[in-house]
Length: 129
Image (cartoon, rainbow, N blue to C red; front, top):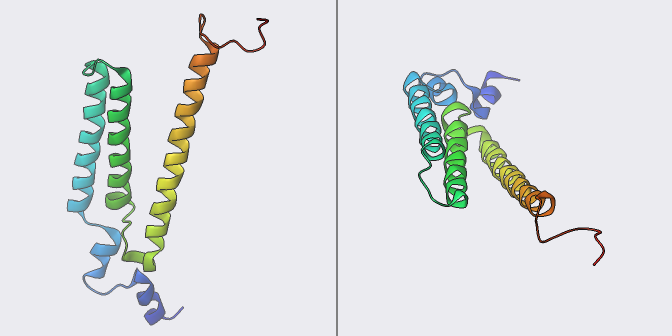
């Protein structure tokens, strides 16, 4: 691959491109601080029993988890709409879809396990009426 073609794909080594393509110390420190904050707040929410309803706490923790995924993708994986000809945006969309499927599937399984496996539940499978 020629150097012109290499530079056209966002891997150029001209001054100013390296920081954008590979990140900077300021960007990494910002990402790290945001990650620590986005980890500490949900930890405090759960350990401090901040919300009365566990479902509310779970929703808030999931929102913080999604925010942390975005922080990691932007500050550490350097994903944005302009780099790599838009392929990183496609990867971000794929990641979001995968996370939604995983979270909704996990919640669905846990809900049905709780309703079908807990003693004294209203739903019994195969029991004679």
